[in-house]
Figure 1 (cartoon, rainbow, N blue to C red):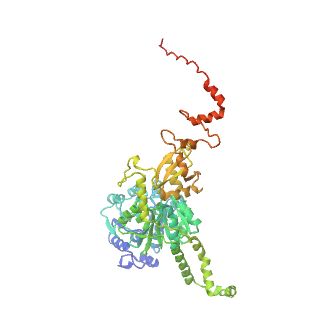
Figure 2 (figure 1 turned 135 degrees about the vertical axis):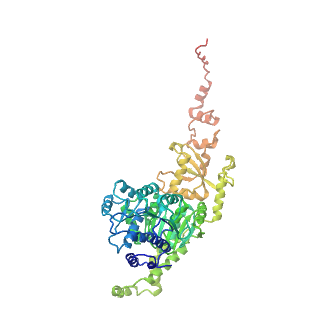
Length: 627
């Protein structure tokens, strides 16, 4: 592979590269830089994030910039604020020995007045997010007349975030005679459309296979029950003491909840999502970049464009809805020729998604076991000892304290000191993992659960629902739970399903028959999720409505059936006490009820009322027209 001196860069750029410590160009740089320096052209670069794309387009664009012309000559569009700031920082570093070249970032969430003042200084390069750039165009603050280079970085992510119209508007404002560079990790249809509309015979440079993940990342997945995801996340974090990771969640609410739980449990973690202000985002990212946070819990949108080096892990707390998003997630680690690990925590229903992603990435994922409590303690202990061995001792400052320390510890022998030293740091792990439960899923039990679901819902092997009579009420795969809400609470079956999903924070609970009564309801829950549902509803923080849930037990006889009411249900309906009279029932009164009534009013009075002669029937009224 050629070195930077052989790529054709000018002296100023070579000095900047050397000052930054770059030794040899990365594959995408070696492929793109010579092609652009030999002949300015439209170019498409397919490469994963973290492979050095910024230098690949930044160095040749800087070489073509005319420092004496104080007009916008190059525009770089990127999807997120963080990436915009990062590219600006990189380009400024590359132009360290070219003082007349100015690079200005334009992005949302920051003061637009400050950015307009920077534009008045007439920079040669603008790095922008599409939304804020369009805002500047509408305000008439940018002149594209001299633009010779248009760069779309992370194009697939940018278009996936809904910036298609903004990108079209910006490109249409630029001169037709320009060079367009497009860099992307994948090539969806939206990106192909830009190629055909705005680029002319582009040169294609592909690093690695198209639409695949980086080869430096090891892919693994762990199979757990949905209710055990958070416990599995904590155990994996404890098993990797030097973890430096991004944890991806699906929603903003879940992202904040997981981050809050990790902080509460003593982990150096924080959240990054769209509900945070720009100042909060900057604060979180600064802490994460400087290593003060070990885990950043983020949504896909918030994490797009993050450029953080040395990440050890990417953890998929939830798999993404689109398989292509997995490639972007995994590309956050294993950057700059370093290795990384991409972990997915899944349940039985998500195994099919893993197969789809495996085909897309072109690699088989390793199935791993969640470490046991003993394994975690062992790993933490050895890490503690390793830290002790490698710690730097400042003899000048500590030697003066040693005589007092020796006198304090002289009553203990060597073995006792070692035990106490280890226990001081290690006791909390021993306490926490003393009776740690097994989190790995037995796949044979998982298949049994699928059989239960199939039987309980009356489905055939093709997944079709059979006749209602095919499902037996005594199915061993489900248990009936009592819920203290009913029709009087304006609850429908769909509301109960939604309530269960909301309180348990899981959509993996299989629900069978729902019997909705006036004051309460019965819901059949699969055996594997019964404890999860009961525990969740016993948690006052999760169950804000205060709905009481318990195993139905003897309450199962209280369900009224259509048609004739059975005696057991009427007995349950009547209030307790010596006089079990209750409210009279519609229809013909039973003899047992009449006997109770006789005792209440007295037999003589009842008999007298019974012997009273019947009144003469009244003559029917005549209708109009009758004689």
